[in-house]
Length: 125
Image (cartoon, rainbow, N blue to C red):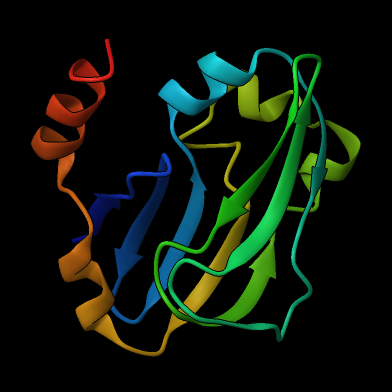
């Protein structure tokens, strides 16, 4: 069974065992508008929680994507290089950015669950 957690910077991580899949939330995608480019991290890159991991560019702005948890990048979504609009179409499924092997599961304790994230977004106005 997978666990999904959210950061206050609008990244999500879906964790199965010691591996996490990371992307940006629907809320973040809606704020950015049409995604035109995604720069992904290198496989093998070690990231601490809250390190800059990727960059997403839209017709409105460029924005950093931060690692919600620490670990080593084990895969990237190469499909985004060809079709960055996958983030617009399916931000929390097909539009994932990278997979990470968690170095410390306690990083998840600093993140919000689904209900907490929904409440957080509602508070943004």
